[in-house]
Amino acid sequence: MDITDFIARREQEREWHYANGFGNGDPDTNGEYLCVDYFLDLDPSLFLDVGANSGIFCERALAHSPDLHVHAFEPNQQIIPELQSRLNIGANAHLHQIALDEAPSGEVSFYVHPTHHETSSLSPRRLMTSRFQAAMQKITVPLSNLDTVLAGSDHNISNVFLKIDTEGHEAGVMRGGQHILSKSDNCAVLFEYSFAWAETGEKIEDSYQFLDGMGFDIYRVLPVGLEHLRFITRDMEQIQYCNYLAVKGYDLSKSKQMDIASPFGSNRLILL
Image 1 (cartoon, rainbow, N blue to C red):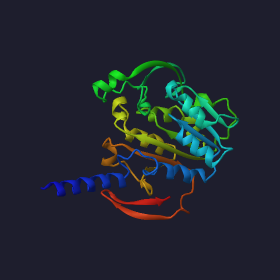
Image 2: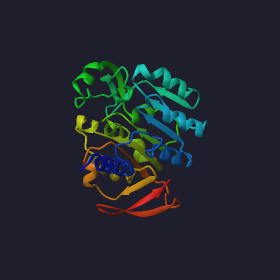
Image 3: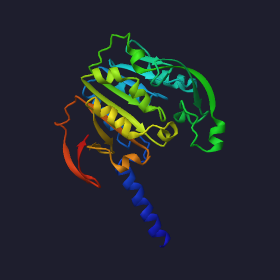
Image 4: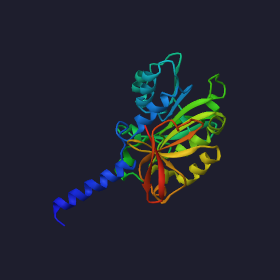
């Protein structure tokens, strides 16, 4: 094999992964923004951003719907000033400088990197390189769960968009928000899946069953829309970076749809 053929095949492999929702962490091109914008057009009553980081999703939500009730959760103090500037905290925007997981209250160790803020986690990132781990700082932060934080609020939870990016603790956040997820008539949960799940011992099939039990349909987020996953497949079990969306109550039948082939049979694709 010559170098030209090698490069061409590598490009084909990369393009295949990106087209199928794997490996692309850019929300502009991997379908995340496309997905958020679609559900913002359905007028959610509550936008929850867990692991808000610098606040790019909150900023997008508020730009689309200035009166939308937004709650951002971020315990990393290094990134709070940038998040605050994007959130433009007011009557409808709320910042919670806490970590969320399954437990209702307490304090917990939180690991932050001085420059790669997006890797911050409740886990010490044992699958990162030794030099990367050495640079991380362990701090203590308050801990709660979604149901506890919102228990005393008067927000309408009938129509909720929840985005979770907590570096391996996405499943814990969902379990800690079970009341909200089960009581919402219309709910969409956008969550990241990556090798960080291996660090925490969480499995995608467990989250699939958890969400399915509450009436959610599961989709993989693609650059062009949402691929309906009818059951757990081998490519889900492989730990590749991608984003999933769980949807309950929303009527997606009015969106343009088509059937696409997959190694496991034909899947329905919702074009966004």
